[in-house]
Length: 237
Image (cartoon, rainbow, N blue to C red; front, side, top):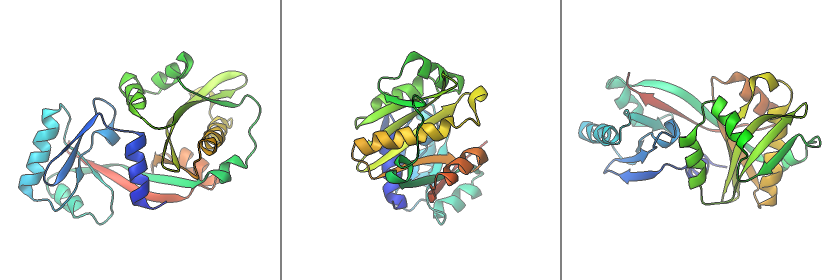
């Protein structure tokens, strides 16, 4: 799982509504789907005119100027810093072979994979701020996909979205209700996601998580999912 491959999987399994190619940037039309599908990405050398054109293109879409940096040594990082853009949401992509997770025990009725999402799953996402725009984004995914419902104490406790691109499954929007945290729900959902992915022919499973989410990072580290790639955003206040 090279960073380039993982970024391609990330784009395919959590897609923007559309993209617009400028001479030096790829502009994403996120339609309210969050930073990952709204951030512009450099495709070549950038000068001040290119940056201004990208800013104007995003503003024309009703989006604040936002850029994603997928290489620590990206020259654009310094350019944006000089233009008043600050770093936000440093993120890691973690991943492992599906067998790493499918080999783990999954208690009976602890998690289920199903598509379309049930209303209770939509409700749990809504509680976490994942609303219609992101649900529409899930619908845009054209490859194999599913949702995972996690249960704890015989009650719905968590939800996640999983999609496949090539032989890599990517987990998105994993949320656990506050009252159900620290009860193994996220762990069980990840095992369920891996089992579904294996059934679809996936060899690897991955997800993106912000560095600031220490609890989630601790969980994924305990599942033997090391960091495979990093990225961050720059935005102007």
